[in-house]
Image (cartoon, rainbow, N blue to C red; front, side, top):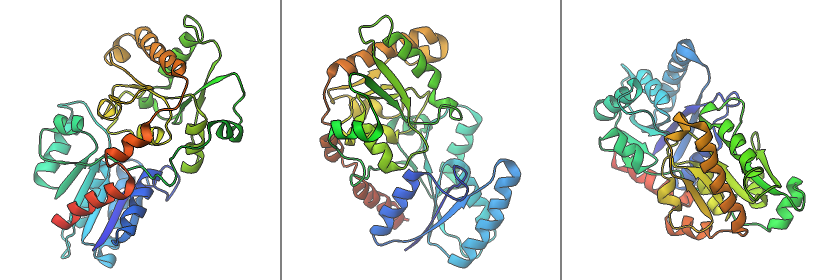
Length: 325
């Protein structure tokens, strides 16, 4: 079976996100013949150029399956296939969530029902939002990369000082507003002010390889996620695999992932992130203090393995979707 991955290549020109690449590699190891098409460009003209280029690739490669990541790439794939004699089946992975009844929600829901051959979402929450039949398959974790390491040695590698509590926040604070860096900063100020922890430092980890991120997760005292919305955040599962304590807003499937994991804390009152920023910071800071006072590593790796979230297990579930089509 030949599978053509279509995903955004705008992070670094021609390169796809690391989790897309990991999934690609895991499916290749499952014996599938894989090809990759990075969508490079922004706006209407950028995507129209991608349609023309993708159409040429489809004619040359004649894939059995096109697996598009993000709904926009799904639309590109559909347009590229129009009028072709060889029509591959189109699978689309929805990687986030969106406001119910929004224009995007209506378009995606229509495509799931009438255009795409199969749709994969990352959490039950997104499936419930859409209200139409989908496959719920979260992204897997590469345990060859994300696994427990010696905490003290990891701190030395990344340059963390003794006597300081380090909270890592894994994204670019300057170009990902949906990740809500201001909430992380505001919560840290309260953690170091009104609360008993006075030596906590917030570190934004970005533009790093997966291997480097794994070392940071092993070095950190806590991972913080402050996103406004997510599907099934990879960073949560990766931190779990490194046995790193976690504080997160209640987004995507974090409740399902963390509800039975000691040392991980969910900021439950999500609405205040949009209506009362100070209250959101206070609630987040309270959970950060709990995580820092926990003072040890979690059993997250055992839960990842128990829940079947290792990347090869997820690859087999995706392959099953392809084979059914």
